[in-house]
Amino acid sequence: MTAARLQEAALARFAQQGFDGSSLAEIAGDVGIKKPSIYAHFRNKDELYLSLIPLMVEAELDFARSVFGSSKPVKKRIYSYLQSIHTRYEASFRVQFWMRALYTPPGHLHDQVMAQMHVFMDELEAIIHSAIAPSDLLPNAQGLSSAVLVKTCMALIDSLQVELTYGGAKKFKQRLQALWAVFEAATGKR
Image 1 (spheres, one colour):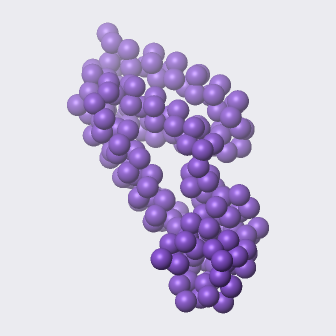
Image 2: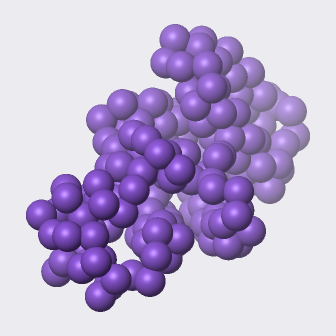
């Protein structure tokens, strides 16, 4: 289980210090081993970092499935997911790592990280679609289709993650309030 412990320590370091600010020696020290012992599990820091992305993708998809698969009204599920962007970020270095990897991956690993992120986004979109398509959001006063509503939700998620990453919690809350007012108006009944 040393590999899993190394991954957990690396998640915390990369979340707090970024890829360039974290060393394998620090990660090894966090686990209580010497740096050369890491190489029994990972060839280098790049491989360790890349090993974290599928773990985070699956964790984030599991979370989305739990929120969007609940029996609450769909608007409550969507709002809950949007709010969770902030609450989970504040509470978990795993989510902090996730957001950092999503928006500022190490430059030399960008393409490898983004390939996995695109798979994640496609799956998240499918999860949201499965919640919206059979919901009472359709029909709506604006005549918006389920496909448009799903893309709108994806844009809301993106916008809020960026605002939290670069603007902080206060701006996140302001943006969520404004975006939600528009979403409510757009999905009102005729």
